[in-house]
Length: 212
Image (cartoon, rainbow, N blue to C red; front, side):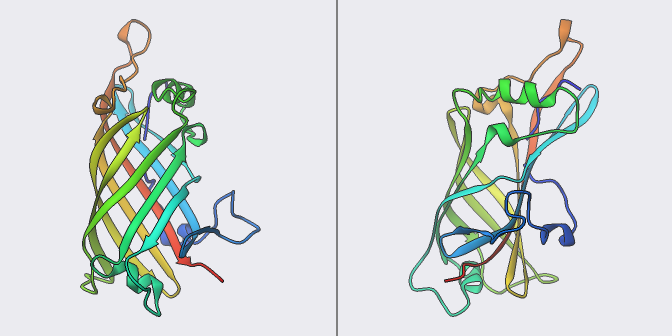
């Protein structure tokens, strides 16, 4: 299928605890006060030929800082209002892959991977937080700047976090229009393929305190 696609693929909790291909066999990647035990980002979209997706397990944290002195439990500190000061990540465009034939090539062309090799997200603020949970899940909303193909746009992520022992599972989702970033949905030969500009990006992270 010749289509374009972007954010997080729904996984079972057990899958989240399996280190991705880059971290398997070695310690989780450190992200400031955190270590990333697992990461998956998916982009989901639709066309006149049906649904499509692309995903990557490569998420690089470029900045992660806490507000004020950390509490004894760093993950609890993150969930407190204003506990996280900065959290910036990048996703290499060339790592996005799809099980749908032809999607990889069209995705890289649409995102102008040679000129803009990374998708970036910079956190500005987190709303909500604290210890109020529903079924053990803490809902949050995060405002930030998303950069795709060199274009910056303000976005809001709907986030659900779940504590499981020494792990914090983060499930973030946002809906986007490709055209807002100057990305034109691909069309097939003679317009046979029509791609919806609306996509959903979803990100799963499993964080654990970094080991000294």
